[in-house]
Image (cartoon, rainbow, N blue to C red; front, side):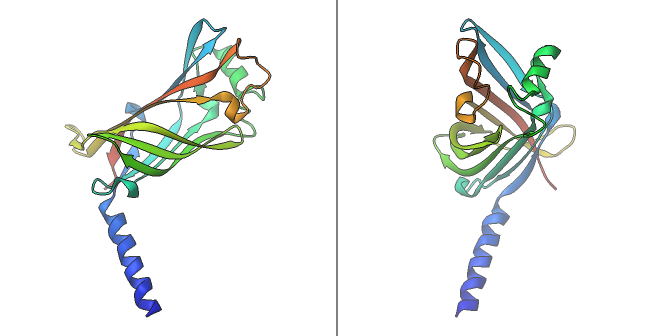
Length: 191
């Protein structure tokens, strides 16, 4: 009886995983960007130039879907080399000790149309916090040149740097607390 139950659970899990389509981020057509307020008067933009991402999408049951994104903190780029070096230092990301910025989804909830809410763990600067934010998952299309199946992901959300103990010695008048994050990704289905 126990063996039969385990077999049924294994088969059910296999069927659920079989329905999910697996994708990888096409980094040439994807961006992980952010903006943060400087001196309460200006938005300074930046991005991470090195990152990877995997996405498993179950259209019939989005709750079974998976998403993991890992950005290399040392690849931060604000179009100012001196500022970028400071951002890599222990004053900010401390890339020698904490090299990755990572998001791992734990659940997807359907909202309307192509809109979902994704919840999961965001980790950087040695701190992990639960976050939820809206995400758009576009329908799959065939890439005209590669003939691969592709789709798009788009998420815009805000995190507080102080929640992650980032740049704590800088007052909010100098570096704003809220960081606006925008992730736009083209993902290609794995063969």
